[in-house]
Image (tube, rainbow, N blue to C red; front, side, top):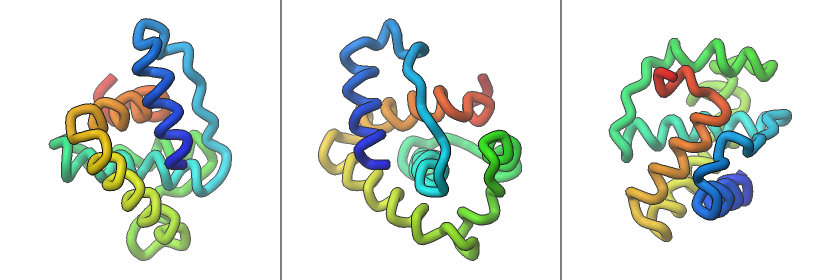
Length: 116
């Protein structure tokens, strides 16, 4: 997922006017863990306010159950790993650029979480 975020950041940075044409596939638990990790990192670092109840419907849309990615869930290890990678992206790129990349990922996959 780190590669997906990095690729997304490069694509969106290089062609922000066409960012909406970018397609993100959410097919594996690792893909979903990466997106949910970005949401959680944004809530702590980028000051995004999200009620966890908002995460269930978009996760179900991709065929996943949100609780499987929560701290007691079967995929939390994937989520934790993705969160660590997101914190590494913040350390590398800086908070502002990283938050924008995470926001763009969420906009493309779970826009309702951002109120859109």
